[in-house]
Each structure stands twice: as structure tokens, then as C-alpha cells.
Length: 372
Image (cartoon, rainbow, N blue to C red; front, top):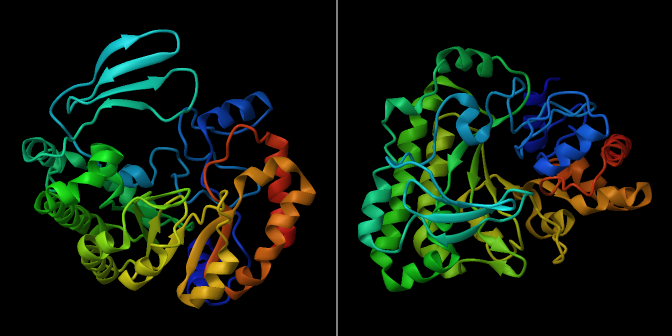
């Protein structure tokens, strides 16, 4: 049974031959550490995706040839804004670099490690003038969004045996990145018409962008990036969700299903409990990554509450892996029963941080195979 069939058997509550061994990549610093500790293979240094790890199934996020990933539709189609301006370095020292983005935003980032950049000025300001400039960078019919050589990659991706996905869109997460948390939090109250216009525009953008892609390529699921929750709950209320997001998600999910995409996944870290039932009502098929966190997110508890409608990927506390065999078994074994039910692929609940050694991750894989 190949990876694509195995994934579908799990998510359709069928009869998979085994549980795939998967993860969601690593921090760039983890790759540096693993290289020093003797990792053999292509690390994709500086990237969060991968690497293709011995003993695991083919990575679902990045292409085996390392020339693409879900964030650029595996080297086929560029989904991100394409502004006319250029990047400009404003200040730089041994530890930080401050740049002006093509939109005029100003961002200071670390040169010594992975950390959240400090945004001094956001790309998108919460007003119509700024929005009119920003929206011009999102032309779904721009033929230059297709990467050179995409025709050859279509055949390669369609003939693959491992499961993978495409970037299906983002109605909250990308706007949050552009506006900032404060900007996107105030806008539905300060200018609800503009807020709704932004969400509606992005809905139509992703549908128009991905239609020609899906006419050419068969994917196993659509990946919707939102990251709309943090450690105590969501960044938007259930009422805002119902008012602005539900009908747009339903439209996108229906479109992807009609285009032959069997499953649509929504990605958010954090404590998702308040939005989870609304996501299921909207029609999302898979929830990811079920971050455990200090709030103790639990795949078992979610399955007990929502039944088989609750398909999941993730749910394994990544911070347990460096703690050794006993801790890893204690994390994995309670997930055995719901994994056996189907509709769930256990994997670390986000990127593997650099406190995890190469040998510790090898041990995790060994124990995972024993448990599942």
C-alpha cells in the first residue's frame, strides 16, 4: 500500500496496512545541530520543512527533490502577494537586521537564531488606501505566478506515491500577518465593511488561483493556514467567526471537494477548543496540529467529544521527545486506541526544536513504530 492510499484509508476509516511515520519538520537550528551530530542526507538548511528523515515515510510537506513544498505548491504556483516594491536593508549589526518590505513595512529580525521578528510597521494598515495597494499584489490570473518548468513537475507530482497537499488559502492567518494582531482585532469594529471585503477578496482569490492548479494536479488534501489561536483561546470570537468566516469557508471547502480534493485541513496552533465545533460545522475534514501545550490539548478528549467527525493529524507533544524512552512511551501509548479507530495520524505537534538531538529523534521513531 503506498502512502496516498494509506492516508485515504486512515482518513476514511478504512483498513490501512500500518500507521505512517510523519512529522512537521524542524527549526533551522535543529538542522544545524543534527548536521554536527552526523545527519546524512539533504537538510534544507535555513528552512522549516524537512529533512527527509531515514526511517520515516516520505515527507508530506516538502517535495522529495527539495525543489518545492506546500507553501509554493511544490514549485508549481506562487500563492503569496507580489508587490512592485523591493526589499531594502535599513540597519544591520552583528545580531539583527532591520528591513523595509516591498509594501513599506519595517521589520527587525534576528541574525543569530530563529525567533519571532519584531514588526515596527505592518505591511497592511487598517484603512482603504493601504488595502487598495495590497490587493493589487494578489492577481490570481498573473501567469508569472507559475514557476519555470512547472509543466514537467505536474507529471512528477501526479505520479507520486506519497501523500501531500497544496496551499488552499488563508482568510485570517495571512491578514493577521499583514495587519498585526492589534490591527486585525480592531478592524471588524472600526470598519466592518472593509474587514468583510478583505475576507471576501481572499476567498475569491484562492478559488480563482487554485482552479487551474487543480485541473492539472491531483492532491490528497487542501491545507488552510490560519494560526488563529494562542495559549488561552482564539484570536477572534465565535460570533466573528459565524459572521465573517463560516460562509466563506463553506464556499472554499465545497469548491475544493468539487474539484476532486477529498479532504480539507485547517491549521492552527494554540487552544482551539472554542473554534473547533465551528470548524466542524463549516465542513473542515481534518484538524492540525492539535498542539498539546500547557493547556493540554488532547486528541483522545476531542475524539470522545466529537466522534469520528473529528479527523486529526498531530497531537504528540514535541517537547517530550528529548525526555527519553519512558516519557515518549507515556505520550504515545494513550493515543494507540484512537489511532486504531482511524481518522488520526499521530505526529509531533509542530516543528522539532533544537533541544532534541539526532539520537533522541531516532529513538522517538523507533518507539513510535513499536507503539503503532
